[in-house]
Image 1 (cartoon, protein in one colour):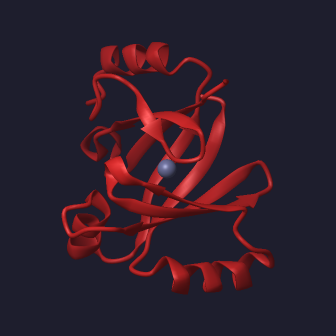
Image 2: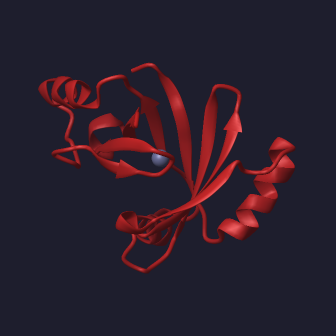
Length: 134
Ligand code: ZN
């Protein structure tokens, strides 16, 4: 694991949350992006070496909609930057972590991503992400 790449925050309204986080941080998000496969709209703020990702559900079956129904708005996941996502997935599986993806998939912000079940990590959903180099 290289560093905390970003912290994902589940929100009901990305427009409302963008306003608040723009006030909090003192600057605008650097991008917004829809991820159709996950049913989410995202926006990203830099914060030093890390980022904050806001996530709004785009349909009721989205994992974000389910999260908000159950737990309300708030911190949704921690994302760690990795150099070789497949090697990390293999290592973590051997360590007994439960992977939610058998292969990495394309996530927001030009990343390959995979998730670990929160039950593996004391209630925290963990995302691994590797930059896609094209
Ligand atoms: Zn994320």
